[in-house]
Length: 316
Image 1 (cartoon, rainbow, N blue to C red):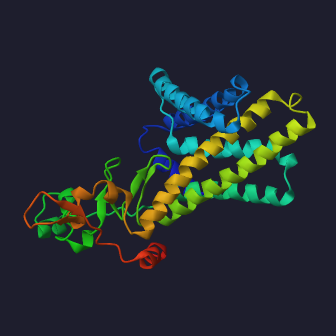
Image 2: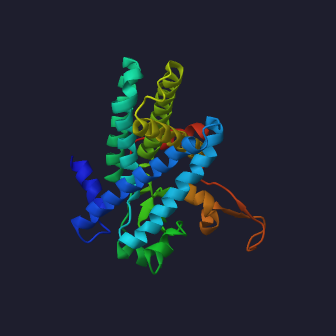
Image 3: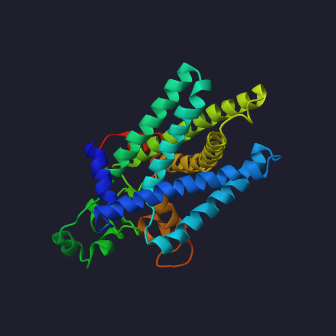
């Protein structure tokens, strides 16, 4: 409970009162329901299309619903919270499974998906309250390096070895050791201290949503084969279809994202370093000394795949 409270405090930082947090939570919940119901209209409007053909349409409908939700923010003056949006999507998926799909699921699969959803909630609370590796620097260090501010000090890290691989997040302006990227979905930076938790949580989402897709597919197939599709509660059926399509869309991009992070781990490079390597001198190799031309990328942190993986997995 203390981790959840800490996570909620982090969500509250940009708000001036608990009422704004409450309104943000209601806006997030409303956006989840609106986007899911919008996706549920796809099979209703295009019943002759296959599931594969529905996916890109469902993706466009979902994006349109999110854009409309953002435009609605201007009218109500309340912004939805991305971490709460993720939280309510987990709760909705779990709720649809428990109250609609569960009766057609084996006991072993039932235990598995309930455990996966519970672990997702636990992991989300953990990462909301985790420290990514934020570093505060004393002014004496800056004087020693001859730098005006912390940002100037962390770019040429050879001046201060203790500041090596500390980057500043452009989103929240925090200085994070081992900074990889800022994750809007979790509302926090991903750095040295929570990167493993992030990878575990990302893997958990892929596994849980894949399991849910399998269970919802079995439910819909059973309804079609038994001829009870028309007799099913339309609201329940729409929620099953929308959450299934949403889960498939999530799994597609999450697998690509997971593969990218596995690649970065194997070669010991961060997402920010790969994108902005020209900002960091240690990644630059010049063909000719004192030449601004012919600058090539070199990774000084790559120690071989096995050593890189071992370094990622070792405890702080």
